[in-house]
Length: 350
Image (tube, rainbow, N blue to C red; front, side, top):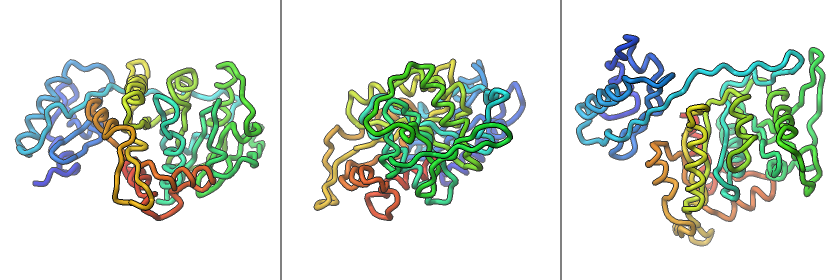
């Protein structure tokens, strides 16, 4: 039997949780089954700390090792505690535009300058190109870059009244719905706001938007950890988070902090995986060559250490930078330069 995710899931239905009597698959305790080379990875999810977690992990290791003796299972089962928190209710006089949004995914980075917004914009376009209904909210209140990256710096969203409540109509471009504080301030003008003002603006850019029916809403977070991140986590029903990094050691140290923020026992947000941006440099005239300017496989190694999927490795290519500066994301093209973003979109969909 081939160790496909479907075959592994079927096998795991033979393992029952002693307290509930339900098999761990039907109970929704098994997530993110992956087969990478010789390694089989999966996540075991609990709604609260469970003393039966160690024997359940041992039972899974024994079962899978017996079925697939040539594969590595031990050490590749990650425990995750995630309580089912209900989405916060909006105030009675506040419009809630998230009622028809199926999944909300935060795009984060431990530090600035790693290309998080480039990844977020191209992921949004790639998902839309594959038929998903997609929105993106630019939550980087102090450094909004989305308007420039989609050539919409001179556009401003309209407001409408519905049932006596104000709604923001997102900008629609490239098959994606976009909001950003950058649509409301002139380029180059800084926003000198304290935390509460930024949080209020963020609420308008997410909850008070007429998103309509969306499969995925991406939230492009500011770098680091702080007020904006906590507001997003507490106010929005996140499906999970994606963390973007470059391979260099100084970026990876901050990535680990960012991952641990989401997995903190007081927050418990599912981390879908890590994206390694600027993984290597490939010059246009030598498309087969790879030069590891920031180190090789740094984020890949960190993902293995944290038992998280590496969702994609995106090269440092001149055309990606030029397309972002020109307002036409590279994911609009069907070229080798855009392939990494479609691989990322496939990984997120799976």
